[in-house]
Structures are given as C-alpha cells and as structure tokens.
Image 1 (tube, rainbow, N blue to C red):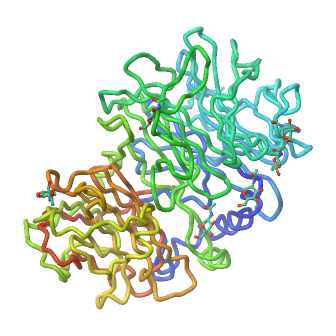
Image 2: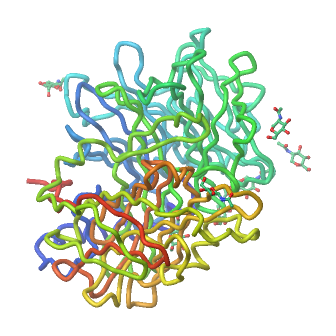
Image 3: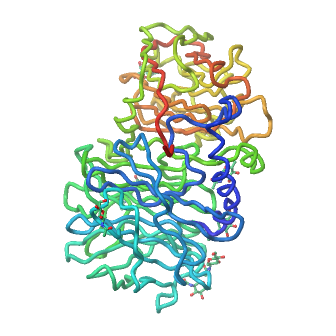
Length: 561
Ligand SMILES: *[C@@H]1O[C@H](CO)[C@@H](O)[C@H](O)[C@H]1NC(C)=O
Ligand SMILES: *[C@@H]1O[C@H](CO)[C@@H](O)[C@H](O)[C@H]1NC(C)=O
Ligand SMILES: *[C@@H]1O[C@H](CO)[C@@H](O)[C@H](O)[C@H]1NC(C)=O
Ligand SMILES: *[C@@H]1O[C@H](CO)[C@@H](O)[C@H](O)[C@H]1NC(C)=O
Ligand SMILES: *[C@@H]1O[C@H](CO)[C@@H](O)[C@H](O)[C@H]1NC(C)=O
Ligand SMILES: *[C@@H]1O[C@H](CO)[C@@H](O)[C@H](O)[C@H]1NC(C)=O
Ligand SMILES: *[C@@H]1O[C@H](CO)[C@@H](O)[C@H](O)[C@H]1NC(C)=O
C-alpha cells in the first residue's frame, strides 16, 4: 500500500502492539471506543482474504517495530465463521533484498489443486515496488502459519523493460485464468496523473509479461491502488470464482483513489479478445461513479468463498480523529463486517449485505411493532444494549405528493446531507434512527432517509444520510456528514434500514443493500450502558415503521489464550 500511508501509520501500529496487552485488563470505561464484534487489528489495509479447507484467513498490514520507515508485514488471523478470529504469527515479513523495506498489500490466488499462493508488493533495497510470490510451507497445517518466498523473486519488477512507475506500482490482484489457460493479474499504478491498472500474463505463474494495453485506465484519476477485478452473475446472487467468464457474467472493476481516499467501482464487460475491461455505458469511473460505501471505507478487497458460493467484501474503516488521539487510546483502524456482494437485477449496481454469520451474535430480540411515527417525534427503543446492537427497520411513506421538490443544484447527495442534517425538517423525512445517542440527545449519530420529487418530472429521489455533526461533544473529531442516493421506488417499496452499531462504528445499509454508509464516531456521554437508541421522524408527514433490534454478543477476536 501507499508509501506515505505506511510511514504515516507506522508509529501507531507500534503503539498498538504495546497497547493491546493492557486494553483487556483496563476497566472497560477507559476504552469506550474499542469495538466488540468488528475485527480490530492495529492497522489494516486489506491483503488477500481467502478460505482454505474450511478455514478463513485474513491478512492485514502491520508494523511490529513501527518507529521507522518500512517493516510492514502481513499479520495473520484465521476464523471458522468470519466472526471469531484467532491470531497467528506474521505470515510474511521483510527478510530479503526484494522486500527488505516492506511487505505491502497483495492477494491470494488458489492454484489448481487447491493450493493457495500469495502475490504481494515488496519494497526492495532500492525502495522500488516489486511483486513477489510466497507459498505455504506445509499444506497439512490447517492454519498455514508459515509462508516461503520463492527464490526467483521479484517476479515482476518495474524496471525490467516494463517502463512502469517504480514508486507507484503495487497491490497485485487475485490472478485469473483466461480461455487460453494463461494466468492474468492486474497491478495498480500511476502514469502521468492517469490511474492505471496494468495487466500481466503468465503460462506458469512464474514468468510474467506485461500486456500491451492496461486492463483499464483513466486520465487525471491519480494513483489507483488496491484494484479489484471480479465476475458477478447477471441473474443470480451466487458468487463465482475469479476465473469465471461467459454470457451470464458481468465484471466489476474497483479502485481505491490515493488522492481522495475514496473507492469507486464500475460495472462492465471483460473483453476477452482485447483483454481489457470496458465499463458499461453510464457506469462511470471515479468521482461520479458508484461506491461500495459512501462513508469511511477504503482499501477493500473481495474474495470468492467457495464453501458458501458467495463473494465476500472486506473493507478498512479509518478513524475520524486527529492522529495524536490514536496514541491516546493506543490503537487505530478496524475492519468492516464482511459483506456478501452481488449484482442488482437492474445490472447497474451491486448489492451488499452483512454476512449471514453475523446473526449468530444476535441476542435478545426487541420487536418494534408497526407504528405510525408522527412528524416531529422521537421514540426510544428500550431493552437493547444500544452501544452494541443490530437494528433492522422498514419505513412506509404515506403520501408521495408531500415530498419536497429536489433543488436542481443538489446533484451530490454528500452535499445535500451536509446542508440538510437531521434537524432540517422536510416534507417526507428526515426519518430513521438516532444511534449511539445520549439520554437527552446531547449526542447522537442520525442515520435517515429523505424522499424528494425530481424538479422537472414527478420522479422520486431517495437519499440516505448519516449525520455525525452531533456525534460527540468533543469538537476535535471529523464530524462530516455522508450521503448516498438509494435507487428505490418509495411509492411501491418499503424503505429498509439496517444499522450495525458497535461502540464507535455504525455501518448502515439502505434499500436492502443498495447503499451503505459507515460512520466512525466518538461519543463522550453515549458510552456503554449510557447509550440509547431511538427511532425518529423530523419530517412534516408521518411515516409507518416496523422492525426489530437485537443486542449483540461480543465476538472473540484475536484474544490469545
Ligand atoms: C505439517 O503440519 C502437520 C499438521 O499440523 C504436522 O502434523 C506436520 O508435522 C507438519 N509437517 C512439517 C514438516 O512440519
Ligand atoms: C508522460 O508525459 C510526458 C510528457 O507529456 C511524455 O513525454 C511521456 O511519454 C508520458 N509517459 C507516459 C508513460 O505516458
Ligand atoms: C511516479 O509516482 C510518483 C509517486 O510515487 C509520482 O510522484 C510521479 O509523478 C510518478 N511519475 C509519473 C511519470 O507518473
Ligand atoms: C497519494 O496522495 C497523497 C496526498 O493525499 C500525495 O501526497 C501522494 O503523492 C500520492 N501518491 C501517489 C503515488 O499518487
Ligand atoms: C450511451 O448512453 C447515452 C445516453 O444514455 C447515449 O446517448 C449514447 O449513444 C450511448 N452510447 C453508446 C456507445 O451506446
Ligand atoms: C482518515 O480519516 C481522517 C479524518 O477523518 C482523514 O483526515 C484522513 O485523510 C483519512 N485517511 C484515509 C487513509 O482514509
Ligand atoms: C406523482 O406521482 C405520484 C406517485 O406515482 C402520484 O400519486 C401523483 O399523482 C403524481 N403527481 C403528479 C403531480 O403528477
């Protein structure tokens, strides 16, 4: 991952490794923001997650020494259910000239015969970014704890007739097999301000040749990191192996933009003749494009879970605090709940939903019977551990004609939600949830809907907002709001909203997975037992609500026995 990032976070990671030990012995209140069911290593840009013989492996970027440039290793945890995790020793760490200054992100590919291999970016002795291969030492070890770097490394070097930018050449994808039985993989780069994903081909996985054309590129996009390229089925939510192609398949191309710290994806066709990705007409790259998550979510990666035939998305959730604050609490960054991801029936966007296994942590269901929420009302949801909960509700609007007309200038939902926080009354909405709220609502994070009518036609525009402006009495945090358009028809469909609340993280899903927003917040009053959960409707018109809330158990994450 980014040069800059690794340096920037090196120290924090180091502090974490010291801090982790006493986190558990300290009284709970000293760590109000420590999450209970999110995977929370010190620092984690995604590396290749995968499944091998029924065990899930997660690698993340970690600096055990911390204080100096580099030293980034692949820390390693395993799980049987993607919820509870067991820590292992680092899988890959700097030891050879081809990775002595860092072992950055990469991906796992399962070779024929079920053997996993890791392709990762090494920072070599000259600080160039090169691509290396490693394999498990002992395939009979179910946890694959030891990894061996092959002596031929680096397999792909930026200087060997490749003419690629040697300081912006990283994050190899999972490799896939083409119809010609040759392997392909893609690597993120920057070429004269253009974001580029180079394509490499190989017959034997060892000797790699750069294709004449990149898999995909875009002018003025800046560095493209953490590219991800995978097939989705047109007519089924079932996930498929990365090497799948054919008439039933569309392809998804995702990049993380180093310049803005945002991720975008496009849906299109993988043109096998030209070996390039062609976005569909209307599916645009970057800035105006689609995002997995319109809040805090970066450096994500998917993998095909062959045990459940699904594609699973993992993303990294950044802090919203100044850096000195990381040190104060001794850790930073965590992992979003893994999400199943598939193509919407429209073919125009992806859908996502927290993996089904998360339900195992649900306990003590509180039913919210069908109720009319009058305009201007707030209702407590009682009986739930509101700092650690899963809430799922649906709203039904009464009369679409009461919707406000969308201002023509409001083309960006992010701006809309920034201008119209939860306290701005509308015709239909805001209605939704007040989470991580204090008793008297001095603090809360508001996750809500607004329904508008288009300014030229009578069409509906549904916006999902996450308003952090009152999330904490502490003024030092980044409390920017987030917004997303949800492609649902509020006249004929109910508006669903699910929020996963975990002390300092709120992951929310609207429109049955059509849009999601992750917020990172640090309440000062609404912590532990003092946290409340409310439903609200600050719009003029009433809406109907029904749903459930569950207290969530604490998962067992990286606790060494
Ligand atoms: C490989 O792993 C298996 C299972 O953990 C173990 O029994 C065996 O001794 C290991 N082999 C070697 C050569 O370490
Ligand atoms: C980058 O731009 C320079 C100047 O415009 C040009 O000479 C060079 O060929 C370009 N490099 C690439 C890789 O496109
Ligand atoms: C190569 O990457 C560096 C960042 O590592 C960037 O500053 C430089 O402009 C890039 N060069 C070209 C030709 O794109
Ligand atoms: C990444 O973004 C930062 C600014 O956020 C910039 O300073 C750096 O040059 C960028 N690196 C690349 C490789 O584009
Ligand atoms: C793409 O869509 C636009 C409008 O939706 C249309 O004008 C244009 O002709 C389309 N282009 C192609 C290549 O289909
Ligand atoms: C992390 O969040 C902080 C505060 O919101 C922001 O300034 C920073 O750019 C973010 N970094 C990344 C890598 O997303
Ligand atoms: C707008 O659409 C709604 C729902 O389809 C319909 O009930 C209403 O009559 C329409 N209003 C106008 C002014 O066309």
